[in-house]
Amino acid sequence: MNTKTQPRFLITGSSGLLGSAITSILDTQGISWTALHHGEEGWDPESGVFDPKHLEGITGVIHLAGEGIAAGRWTDNQKQKIHDSRVKGTRALAEGMAAADQKPAVLITASATGFYGNRGDEICTESSQPGQGFLTEVVKDWESAADPARDAGIRVVHLRLGIVLSAKGGALKKMLPPFKFGLGGRLGDGQMWMSWIHLQDAARAFVTAATKDSFTGIYNLVAPHPVQNSDFTTALGNALKRPTVFPVPAFMIKLLLGEMGESLLLASTRVLPEKLKASEFEFTYPKIDEALKDLL
Image (tube, rainbow, N blue to C red; front, side, top):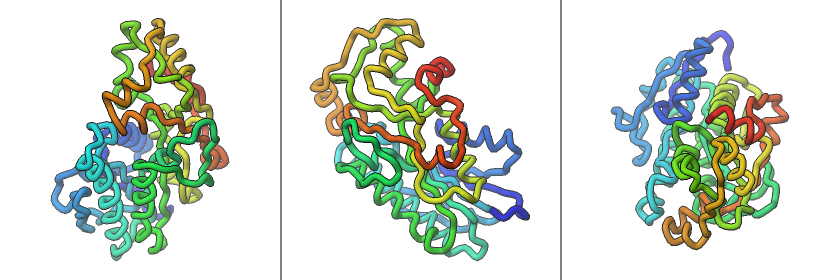
């Protein structure tokens, strides 16, 4: 980033769980930002509409907006919304940035470890090949949609998020009620790997990637110690001081949630943040026990 220019970021999805954490850090560091809200004139990610007027005075874009992947059962219509809100929105932003007279210096986009698919015990790094399935195809299209910005010489960073842990939202918030009543337990056989990250570490990584010119390309945004579901279940029970003796059978998850349940709850993805560790980024919460202790 040009050090002579005071940074000012345009942020999509700023009111979400991750967006709120990112903007809080930017505020603390005295970095200016502007929110671009869904439905605002000249911004409709599902339709691929973006008015470059929103880039006036902007030095970088942090793009988080997209239909929640767990917002509803994966009907054909819902899958199309998940795909289009990410791919069309990212492409519209990238094309707008590439065409701007004063091009922003950087585009930071959220991405997902769903790229790797269901890989069992295999360790996946940024150099691993894609997996198979709906989420893999979404991520491939999502990341490729930023090509216009990349081709225009804009620094582009894709942060492939694992499970973001926060008691205020996301997966952990949904898990808490049954676990608090002692009704929690492992999913299926509990052997699937969970690649997770504490919300604050995720937000700090986004701000670091946005403000450090050395960051470019794809980064796995996960803690350095993924855990199997059975170990996560035990750690969560310990943090809440509750038993975890009620497993949820795999067939029940498939019956209730279909393809979404198989992809989000039963798939095994063991991802390591090789590039993030090489960048000397310091995780505040590298291990699941300390992360859950802080959050709960």
